[in-house]
Image (cartoon, rainbow, N blue to C red):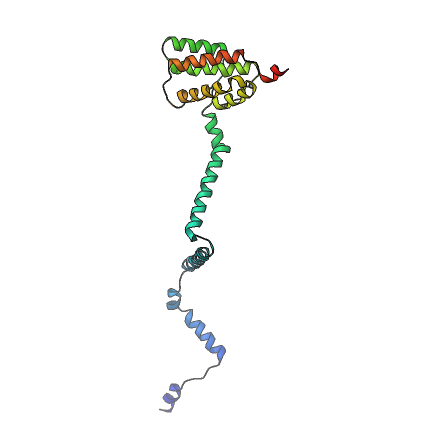
Length: 213
């Protein structure tokens, strides 16, 4: 009886012992299984920080989070536009709309090809070849350098600086070439005739630098 009484009496343990026993208890399988995983804790931490950030933005920025999202979208669009105009994408786009594909021929060969195409009623090919004759003739006169991948618009712009009298019809001819060759718009006899006249005018025109001398 006395022994049972003594075992029922609470034992007064010191603080260090109590801490040790508590640690042992918490390290048991039951508590460890109930403890959240590190992934769950990391997700909770990120979610908490994100929520805090959004609350701060919503209170500090006029228009709140929607204004920030709109700004991000605008920045993305600007980056895409810049890349299209000046990056590798722009280079690829320009090379895909070049006046010449493959080896260059003499301007006379392009004129003959244009005349033959026009005589059989193939004005699409006639327009392509006569505009190439215009550009090739300018290269042969050293008014344009033989640059690979030059587009019709680039040729018209560069030549128009030296031949201002035909600058406007050169730009119109470049648009016609692009419309037919790349835009799939059917060419007409009138379009071919206008480019033939442009070819004649460019061959007679004197560059401003030589005229001034």
